[in-house]
Length: 492
Image (tube, rainbow, N blue to C red):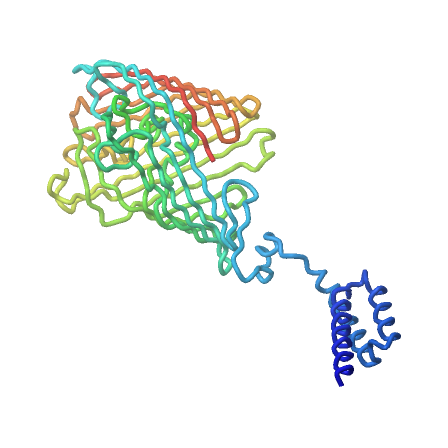
C-alpha cells in the first residue's frame, strides 16, 4: 500500500510537470519538442493513454489561442486616444509630441509662458508749465531715470487643458501674469510702481476662460480674455516683445506702454461671451457681448460716466489671402467694431443720472509679407471711445463725447530667420468736444521706434530698442522723451 501511494505520488508529479511543460512550451516554435516529450512519457508508461490525449488536446487549444493574442499589440498612447476602447482601465500619462505638457488619458495638459527683463534708460524733458500735457504719455521730470523692469509684456504662466467630449472640442485656460517690479499697495501688474525697499511685485490673473466648439460649428468662448477691438494692432506691434515707450520709469510698474496710446487703443482683457466662426475661403468672423466699461477721467480734466444697463458689443472680421493668390506675397486684412451706451450714475458723473451717450468705434488694418519683409498698416477712429485705453478721456467735463483717431506704419525685415530689424511710427489723436475749451488736454501722443531682435535659441530672444515719444496739448504745450532699452524675453 505504501509502495502504491509512492508510485501514485511520483506519477501525479510527473504528470503535473509534463502538463506544465506542455503549457509553457505550447508556442508553435516548440511544438515538435513538446510532442516528442509527451510521446516518450507515454511509451515509458508514465502517462496513460487517457492522460496523453488530454495533454495533447490542451496543448492544441493553447497553440490556437497564441496567434490571436500575438495579433493584438500592446496599446500605444496614440491608439488608445483614437480608440478609447483600447485604453487601460486606469489613466495613463504620456509626453506631448511638442511643447511642454502631458497627455492625461483623454485630456491634454500644456504649460506655456514667458519671462522678460530689460534695462531701460530714459531721458525725459524737465517738468515745466510749458511741458504739462494732461493725458500725455511722454515722461517729464527733474532727472534722467534708469530701471530694470518688464517690457510691454509682464511675465506669464499659462495652464491649458483640452479634451473632446460628446463630439465637442473643449478647452480651459488659466493665465497668470506676474511682474518684476514692486507695486504700490495690493495691485496687479499694471498698478503704480514702488521704488522703495521691502516691496512686492504684482500679479494679474488676466485669463480664465472656457472654449466649446467643433470644426464645423465654430467656437464659443466664455470667461476673461483679450478683446476683439484693436486686438490685431497689439499682437502685430513690433514692440510687443520689447519696451517701446516706457510710461513711468522712475518707479516703474510691471508693464511699459509699447505703442499703447501711440497709434492704437489698448484692447484690454475683458469678461466676455464670444463666438468665432469657422474659416470659409479665408474669411472668419467673431462677435460677442462684453462687460461694459465706464468712461474714465484718465487725464484729470475729463468727465466720467460710470453706469451701463447694456453690454459692450465687439465684432471682428478677418480675411487671410490663400497662399499663392499673389505669388510669394502673403496678406491678411481685418476690421473691428466696438460700441457701448455710456450712462450716468449721477453723483459726480458728467451728466444727469440715467442719461447716456453712445460710444462707437472701428479699426482696420493689413499685414503684407514678402520673404523676410513684413509691412503692417493700421488705423482706428471713433466717437466716445477715448484714447490710450477704452473710454479713457472719452467725454468732456459736461459729458459730451470726444472724437478720436490713430494710425501706425510698421516695417520689419528678418534675416536668416534669426535677426529681425524693425521700425514704426504711430500717432493717437483726441479732439475736443463741441464747444469745449480745455488747453491742457492731450491732443496727440506719438512715437517713433527702432529695434533689433535676435533669436538666440527657440526660447531665447535678445532685444535692443530706441524710442522717441512726443506729446502735445490742445493749447500748444509739448513734452518729449528718449528711451533706450536692452534685454531678453524667453518664451516656453
